Length: 582
Image 1: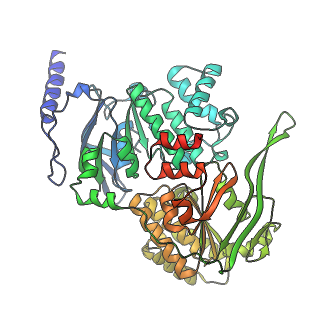
Image 2: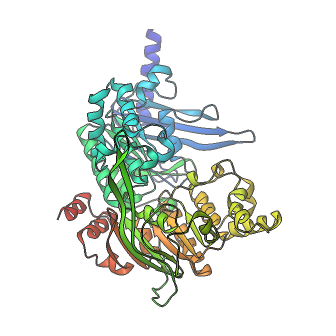
Image 3: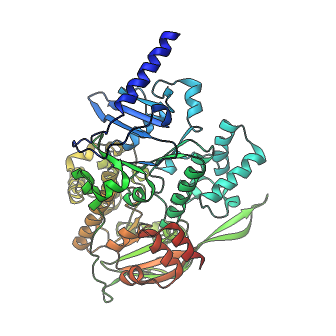
């Protein structure tokens, strides 16, 4: 027994001595020397962590010898592009990697200077997960159970870790949903994930992660699907919680604006390695590594086509309404309606981009789906002068070639069972059945090349591609039919900043080449500014402001639009909320 204690003591002393001097970055640049606290004073200590993924043919070194630590109450950010190893590193802390395909050939992860999380098993590991350490996952639709209501999913965390159920749990669930910005939480308790918007689903994930007030909150792109004002509120909430409770957030994000506002220290990752780390302000003001400089300079840029009022009108709506009935009681009588879209009129011309902006739940996506006749609506919808609002499914089928959509989540919208060739050629099989298999393959190859992908990759599957590559595949699927009108539903929301810039450049190139008209739905106003000629601002199903993009961005007229701009362009959350309240 004494021997084991002496070994443990010796190991800790050795670790203390290792951290007593400054740590060089991968480039050899050294930040200011800080005397590191003893291991026991750190919440998490990651040392020399390695993660390998083994397949039948090869071993992929996803993470290579990374080291970082998090002190109680401190916010640390892991920054880097898709595939850099950020999420894999975080999942290693939670021990959520798919073993035995994933392995840790080296490294240690200590929690509060005691347990090595890579060696903890069974009940003790379960005590850490969800209680001491919690995680907000990036893709809420695939993380939430589609068969359970929101109340059950959030309440399950309280029941498992705190033994709460019934009214006691319900009260806390309502409080959590209110804190994360879900309107009318009482009405949402019985809702299922598919009945919520992308931003609302992400807020439910955040509520679940905060339920047990963890010591360490791993936030994997926590605001990816959120609009700018709710994003500001969530970040303010995380700040408050970590101050009041001593909770330490580990932020995994590609949004450098969030990092600048939130993180005390930052680690920049590339190809599984930490290439630079240090105080956040120091890294932003004086980056040492070329990759860090690249990330800081990356921002969506572009010049949308000039507004042409004489161009052919492609899409037009007048007083469009989409109302969903609220049914209650044994006989499911309609007692009210959710007015998702309530009297919106718009006009989209050839080779123009109409940006639809607003908070989650404002009706942006519902409006787009109604225009495409994918959901029922009331009010005239015209496509190149032809009324289509009363068309049935069979009447719309010939028009599907001209009217396409690119969805928000490329991972969810691409079938994992089909190869890239099969995904892209599916529309050709339906719309152009006379094409031979060889001709279809040639068309797929051409389209992949047009969106910047290697045509030889068409026999691979979606999971073999990064997020940006999957979105390019989704764009290729839409473009292969040579449409005139494309609805783009948050096509860049889950992408790295540098990849966002590439997608914006691609969309502008395709628009000019094929004279495309875009309905661009997004909460990312920086991307909208790079793409849109004209902008409609929506709130609670109503178009509250409309005009040329330059006017909306430079001189918004109403308080709500001013609040969106304030939250989007680096003003504080409190400033944005103050504007809304005026």
